Amino acid sequence: MSNEINDDDDAITPQGDAAASSGGVTVGGNVGGNIIVGDHNTIVNQYPAPESFLHQLPAPPHDFTGRKTELDELTKAVDRGVTISGVQGQGGVGKTALALQLAQKLLPLYPAAQFFLDLRGVSDSPLTPAEAMAHVIRAYRPNERLPDDDGQLKAIYQSVLHDQKALLLMDNAKDKDQVLPLIPPHTCCLIVTSRQHFALPGLYTQNLEVMSSDDARDLLTIIAPHLTRHDSRITNELASLCAYLPLALRAAASTLAEEIDLDPADYAKQLRDEKTRLGLKGVTATTGEISVEASLNLSYRQLSDEAKRVFRCLSVFPADFDAQAEDMICEDGKHKQLSELVKRSLVNYNREKKRYWLHDLIRIYSKSLLSVEQKNAITLRHVDYYLKLFIADEDAAFRTDAINLSEASAWLSGLEEKMDLTNEGHRDVQWAIKMFQASLRIRFDDTPENPQETEQA
Image 1: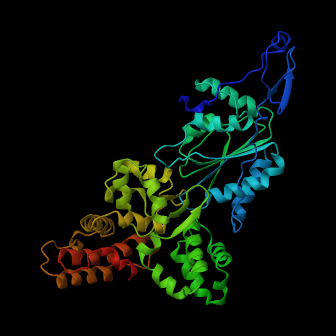
Image 2: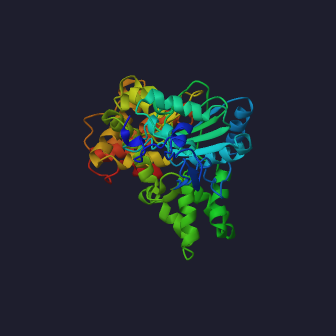
Image 3: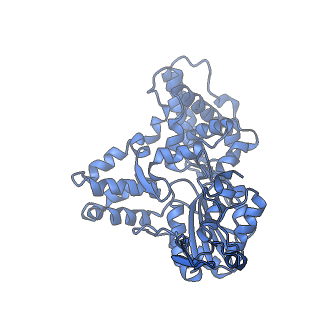
C-alpha cells in the first residue's frame, strides 16, 4: 500500500504522568484549548480537538421517481437480516439514486455513522481497498498515522467499526476483489453499486433495469411540469426515445425545463436523430454532468480488444437473439465475450427464454463505433446466418450468379411467399428479410451508406 495514506504531520502521543511530574510538557489526547502541565505551571496552546466525519451521506435526488418494487425488495432483505446489498446495472440506469434512497430509509437503523464513497470502478484509477478503508478510518481517527501493511490496516478498519451501527454506501465498484476487503462487521450495513455483476458471501443483489413507461413519464413531468399541458403522446414519445433510461430522461426533461421556448414536439423530432440521443447530458451523483455516450464509453473502455469487437458486432441484432446466432454471426467461440458483456451490464439476458438483447441506446452506441465497411460486412453475415437457418431446401438458396437487383428481388419475393412469416418463431427471419433487402442493394451498389436505415421501415 502506498505511503500516501499516511498523514504528513507527525503523530502526537501522550507521554503519561511521568513526563508531567518531571517538569516536561506533555501534549496529547483530544483535549482542546489551553492546558497547564509540569512543575512550572507552563501554559500550552493545545491543538483543537480533532473533528470526526461520521455523517457523509448525500441526500437522494429530490425528484426520485418510481422504483417502489426494487426499494421494497431491498428493504425487506435488510429486515430479514441481510447486511450486504448490491444494486447492479448499466450506466445511467439510476443505481446511485436508488442506493441513496435505500440508505435514507435505513438511517434509523444505523444512526452511529453513514459513509459515502465513490470507488471509481470505471475510471482509469479505481480506488484501492486500502484507500477506501483509510477513508473510513480517518472519519473516526482523523489524526492517526496509518500503517503501510494492508493486513494491519484492515484490522484497524474492523476495529473502528466493531459494534458500530454504521451504514457504508460504496458506489461504483469495479469488481468483487475491490469490495471483498471492505465488508464490515455484522452490526453494520454495506450497500454496493456496480456496473458489473458479481457475487459475494451474504450479498443480496438487485439487478436494476430501465424505468417502466409510467415511471418514465412521471419523471419527465416532474422535472418539466409544462409537459402536462401538451398532448400526452408527446411525453410518451420522449420517454420512448430516451429508451426509459433515467440518465437520458433526466437530460431531456432538464433541457425542456431550461429552454422555455423549446416546443416539446419539436424537441421530440430532434431526438429522433440517433446522434442527438447519444449526446443527451444528464447529472449523476458521482460523475456530475455526463452524456449518454460518455457514460457508455466508460464501460466500453474497460473491455478487452476482443470483447470490444464482439460488442460492436452486436449492433446488427435489432431485437433479442440466442447464443448460437451470436456465436456464428459475431465469430465468438462459445459466446465467451458475450458472457463478459452480460457481466458488465452491456448486454441483457433473460434466463427463462435464454435470449440476449441490447438496450436501445446501447445498440445505437455500439453501431456508432462501426465503419461503413464493418456495418456492411456484419449485416451480410447476419442475413446469411438466418436465411440458411430457416430455408430448408437448397434450391431456395440465393443465386450467387444473379446479375442485377431486379432478379435478386424477384427471388426474395418468391421466398417470402413460401414462408409462414406470421409464426412468432420467425421473428429473426422477418428481420433477416429486411436486412437482406439492404444487403442486396449493397451487393448491387444501390444503397445508402448505412444498410440499417431499413430498420425504420
